[in-house]
Length: 198
Image 1 (cartoon, one colour):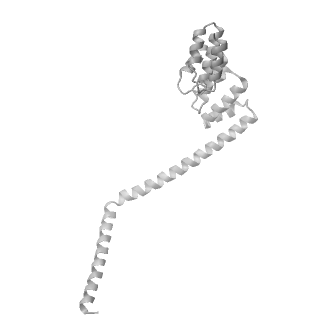
Image 2 (image 1 turned 60 degrees about the vertical axis):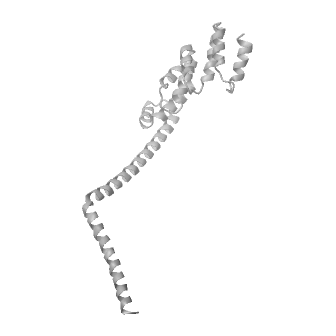
Image 3 (image 1 turned 180 degrees about the vertical axis):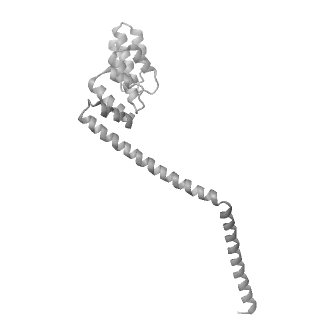
């Protein structure tokens, strides 16, 4: 190699080292300038991860405790202290338990207590069951007018039967005509319209 090539090679090495040191200096200045926010960010991330883990552990412990309490209730359903503990651990599970007890007892009063339940479907089912067991026409009408309720068509059939018993044929027809043709109760409605409500 010639002397000129050697000099060019040394210059290139010096330029690359110079660029490396320049980047190191810029990085060092950045770290010094934003040292506290960077440390704060790392601490915040660690705290968020730790809080999330603690929340998950707490949630799992609560679920386990609620399940154990439910087992105790299954063994002794009259234990009010255990029922209160289930209410505090898991209100939704408490409402499901109370619903199962109301079904077993066929108690309109017990169903009425659950009409405002936040547990999935319990409020809806309890409202229908309370109205049906009480034979309360106004409650059934209120239930049937709600949107997206489970037993809407069944409530309409019951309202039609009540109207038939009262001799209100037009009202019975009106209730039965609100049942859609693709409903499982469509044939029942047609039969009542044809045979029972002429």
